[in-house]
Length: 405
Image 1 (cartoon, rainbow, N blue to C red):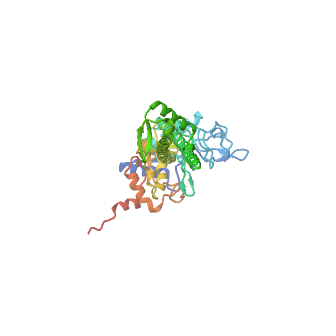
Image 2: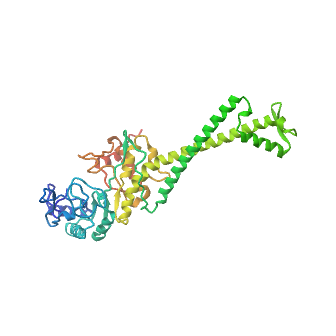
Image 3: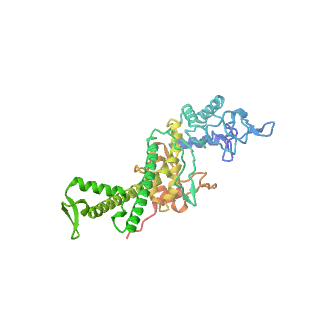
């Protein structure tokens, strides 16, 4: 983790060797992105009370540069504008002197070291508005934010609900409102379907117990009588056929009851199964929508906070692919027919990937299934977004010789 930001000497090489490496990349028309950690920084010394919150080097900050709600390092700054990273002091970007020093450092990396852009680490820790200020000050060719918001799993399967806090910051927030409306309609259909089911059950039991039409509700009998007196000609049952004949109400009371019973039964069944069909459609729509929208919403909110000046890793797509490639391909499309990820909402700002130094490699916090790598890279290669990495062993999969007959 970073300590003295201006000291670029490490086990990988010296500062001069780093500059030479970047020059060689430029000679091959390649851009070099610096992995900059702006959210937290390791301290050099302990305070009088034994807390590591005194920074050294050129940027010799004190506890006033640390957010006050960091539970481990006794900062004296303002509250954090994001999530707390517990392994090191979290920097307070609301301080003017902090932002001034960071902007000078980024310009030093751009103009003296030669970096062309930034890979911004743990951007969940501070507001995207500060990222916008840093990007506008350093003018990188490209910037990517690591907004790693893990998806929830239960019993090894992707949870249906990835969070309730849909924020209205994204410009297309009307979709979020429609999601709530559809969920309400779905539940209303389920409730109405249950009512009709209960009504039909009670109705049939009452008719069976009575043995005749007297098991009908009172309002049905009243409607039949009214119909007989008003309409004149009556519908009667004779020789198992319905006929129209002018008779007194009492003589055709039964046939009307049978006729209305059949009409009512058919109508209720149509309504009942129509409600069931609508409910199933809404349930399937909500199943997929709740999985993807809340998660990718938070990433899009962060991009929006940067004013669109930065891209973001499409963590949603990576998580969806983990499950989709295990015979759950329905997860790959949302109700609007678009990909289920940041690439489906903001493709020009989505940076797709399957692995990085945190998820895979030696750390292996969230490794992609080894047997699905070829399919995963085939997917991101054929879909919108900027591909961040493509291992050589996966490139070789595209050049497997075919044995033709």
